[in-house]
Image (cartoon, rainbow, N blue to C red; front, side, top):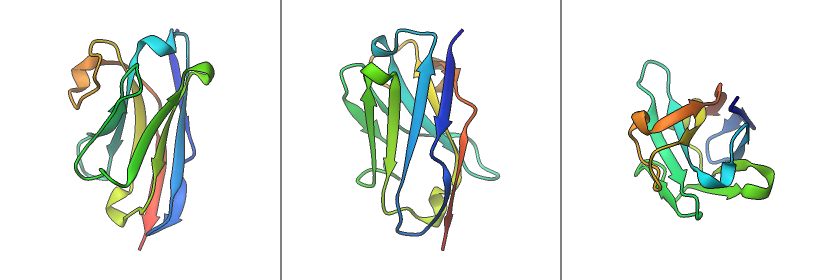
Length: 124
């Protein structure tokens, strides 16, 4: 059984930083690309970024230059470092396993497993 557990969310002031973690179990982690998505109140879930098996990361334009995704295959964990946070970054953040593509992208159909999400709130 594949399980993804996100942690690290919370309340932060605009301009601050948070680091989210996503611990995976029940799969050969190193064989999968991973994605980070977010869903703001009243909005559809959107792709924030992802990281390939080899460690190449991709980002949505809205977070590029502020967010960094990394992975530690020894710990079966993917990270989302978020800097220069803005109120519009407020959302529930989800990690997901890309079980189809080598390079993670925004199409949710490529993702087979999802975490439960962690809330990030950025105050102005």
